[in-house]
Image (cartoon, rainbow, N blue to C red; front, side, top):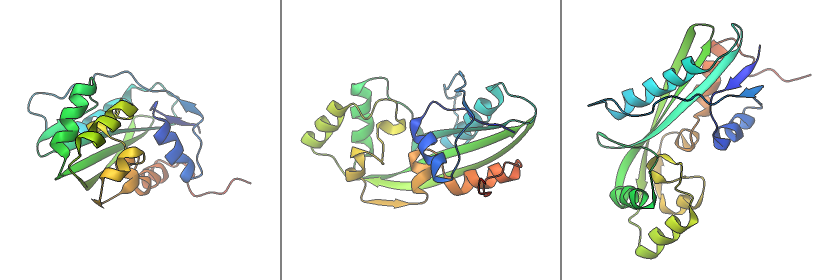
Length: 192
C-alpha cells in the first residue's frame, strides 16, 4: 500500500512528517479551482479536496491524500492572489477582522473517499503601511490562500486563533490521521 500525496505544497509534506509519514509519491492533480457561481467557501473547499483526490491516478490499493485550504471573509472566498495588488487588497480586507480558514481533507482508496474539514477562526491585526509593504516585498504571500502564511512572517500579524493551527497551515493533523486510519493506512504503527 502506497501513500500518494496529491499536493505540491511543501507545508503539507512537512506536516505529514509530524505524523511520522513520508509519502511514497507526490502527484499534484491539475484541476480547475474556479469557484462555481454562488458557491460558498466551505462547500467550495470540500468539493475541491474531493475533485483533487479523484483526479490522482493510483493503483487500487494506494491511498491518496489531498487537501484544499480556503480563506473565507464572510461568504467571500479569498483564494491565492493573482498579483501583489490583489494580495494587498486581501490583507487590507482581513485587517482588524475575524475570518475563517477552512481546510478540507480527502483520502481515497480505490473508489471510496473519506472526507473531513477543519474550520478555524483567525483574527488579523490591521497592518501599518510599513508592515503591509514589507510583507508584500517578502513575496511570502504568493501562492497562499488569503495572501498569508501563519507559519511565516504573517504569524506576527495574527494575535488570536480558535481552531486547528495545522489546519490553518494547510493540513489538519488530527483529521488527517483519522481519515488515513479509516482508509486502512497504518498511521500509528512504528516502523521496525
